[in-house]
Length: 385
Image (cartoon, rainbow, N blue to C red; front, side, top):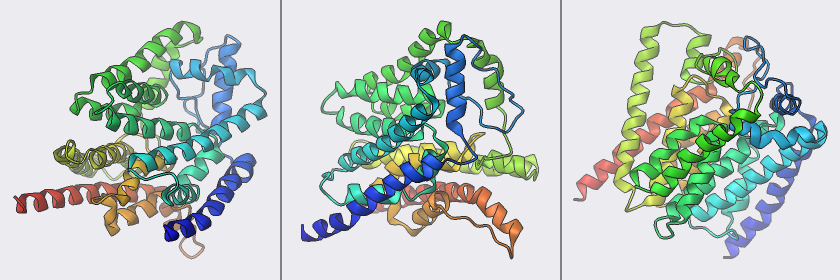
């Protein structure tokens, strides 16, 4: 207890100052990349009765990518002054990240008075993911909170079935905003938690259906935005497809690597099913991480700051068994989370490539590490039978 008190005494001041610095200095200053103005302009167009999806999809500026249902939920922002709306959005996302880390602390059966919460806050707010989420002013912090609450409620729904509705609603809201969260419905599917599954599917479907008549030019989401999302862009894209778009090395090598990593991801996810009942916390948090890192690496778009959605996987470090008990996982985490620039006057080309694709290397290494770790667990389990 004395050790915990000393760690808390050191961690809390560092955590609080880092949060304040990221929110009131880094985020308030902003960066050339500005995700919030795109959202604000879209909801303002909605309020003025103008088509929401009228954008230049051949341009590199941030584009509005949310569904009509998400647009309806964000519509109140358009009634506020821009500066006030942006400030509230930054604070809301920072608070959501802090709350998500609290939920994850509880999920791994640690008290909020333990050092895990302040230490995780300090470490999280140092990362590229959190720093750029706040500086770019996007919604990823709120999505992290949705993911954390989903996992917490899903695990506790075994004993309190009504929490299945909570799990389904929050993951449904995440899917509504970013459909790449949909594969997480695999978790309630294999646990046969029909409440979570029904709400997770129903929430985005119902809200989109309700929003469609109220969002001007909603058909543009299908006719204009979906074709854009199905293509692979060659900028700000750390996925394997993004790497291939940036450096065209032939379809044969691209698909060979893609299929290998898809197989490793699938094998890890299926292999983890062995622990879904005997160690559900390990299973849920590790499977969620395997799913998300597979999406980042294998899909048409993977941005480095998405990596904060791997925080639940990293929290398994405090469990008896974890992917993050290996050096490979921490090396991978450094590659996709560390806020470092590799720009070099001596080696400018290598530095530029490192800045673009360290996340790609980190995600691929984490996929290999998860697969190898799960394979090792299986071998150990078989040898003790």
